[in-house]
Amino acid sequence: MLSGTASPKTGGTELKRIVFDEETIARRVRELGQEITTRYSDGELLVLGLLKGSFIFLSDLVRRIDRPLQVDFLVAASYGAETVSSGNVRLLYDPETELAGKHILLVEDIVDTGRTLNRLVSLLKERGPRSLEICALLHKHIAEHLALEPAFIGFDAPKAFLVGYGLDHAQNFRHLPYIASLT
Ligand code: 5GP
Image (cartoon, rainbow, N blue to C red; front, side, top):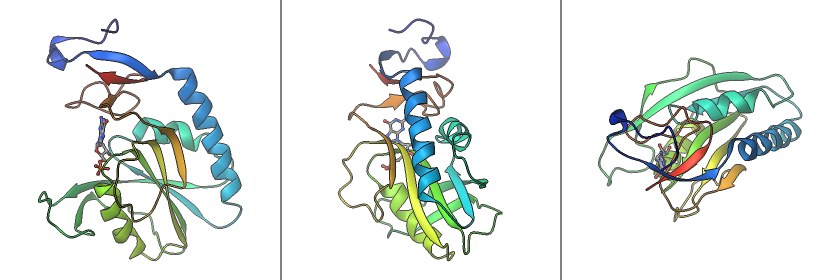
């Protein structure tokens, strides 16, 4: 167990090991910011964070992008059934910002099965953006079919369940400054 992480509120769930520490994350986020700055040399850029998991990553990332941009968020909920066709995603919060004609950079915490992204990609494409790319902090590389491979990836992730730096387990651990695996 890592010190200071177990509490009655976390239901006894404990962290196993730090997978990416604070310094490693900060270094990679700086690099991603540079990559994104270079990629978008012209046009309007809208950085769209998928809540809640991306909130810390997005706030660090946008401060490392050295060009004008706008920030908005979306909150997505699937209809629940595994059998719904891709594109069937319900937005609990729909970005107020106009998407048409802009470069949209969708920021996601972690790509696992890819279902969330596949649904969002088709929905966002319908809004007529100038371009659509994904920036994922973590990628497990287990998705069988991704409608759009992330153009920007923070880290290849182990197949463990990860928490911290925005990622939760039952809403706990989001505040940790590092990324850890659970026991
Ligand atoms: P997908 O649709 O790609 O299967 O799942 C993506 C979502 O599942 C992520 O945005 C995240 O909310 C959740 N998720 C997938 N793997 C993990 C993990 O290792 N840790 C946490 N905390 N959430 C995960």
